Image (cartoon, rainbow, N blue to C red; front, side, top):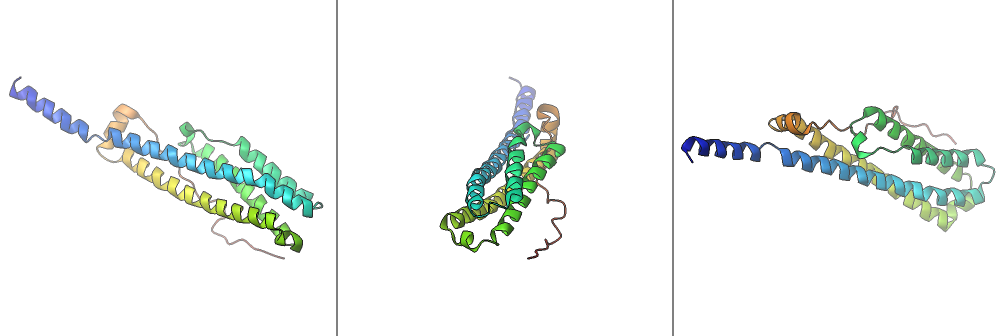
Length: 193
């Protein structure tokens, strides 16, 4: 082996060890894992809703419209899924967020209905469900924040040198979409009784 071949071999090893191939793969897997956490927390919320609706239904039979709205929003959420390969599609992400936002709005209206029923507010089963739902909403927020952080790390890793060369020539991975605030989120909601 001559000196020239040895130098080429050493340079190749040094270049490949810093090309970012493994770190890009690791960052993309972190995005998929964070997305799985989001799906799990949304599933937890979807699983709690039938129990909440049936508990409220017993007390507020004439609030059928609100209950129907919650059930329909939950069904729509069940039909709106994003697979890991669509995380770079802004339209799919927006559709998913809209379905989740509609469900959040329906749940908010349901909780306003509950304010009219003092017996229901004192019912231990309802209180337990309400606490679980509040905790789940907090988990959803945390999962979204973690997802956005992993998306930022991934997107940065495929756009910075020398990883961008590795991505452009070997992987061809696309940017992932982060969660964005719902339209009108900057405006405080008006609550009237």
